[in-house]
Image (tube, rainbow, N blue to C red; front, top):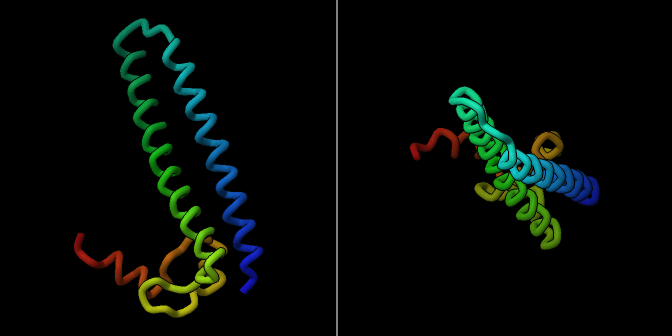
Length: 114
């Protein structure tokens, strides 16, 4: 498996997320200075803030998964399913380079009651 290729994919996604997070933080800072004229403006601002926060939370979670995958590359454990120990198919890793599980195990985990 070409781990250098996947490492570059992960690093590129990490750069993109950090850029997005920086832009979001800057945007949220500038929103603090916006003058709110009525309840409609306030509601719109609150909704925008909630959406931005949800996106930011999702991107922070993805960033953690990317960091974890990069550590696995350094340890020589990248691309191995954490449940069954089998190699994760390269196509799956191209789509989700920080995948921890093969398709079969991922489906098992998603079906488990939480």
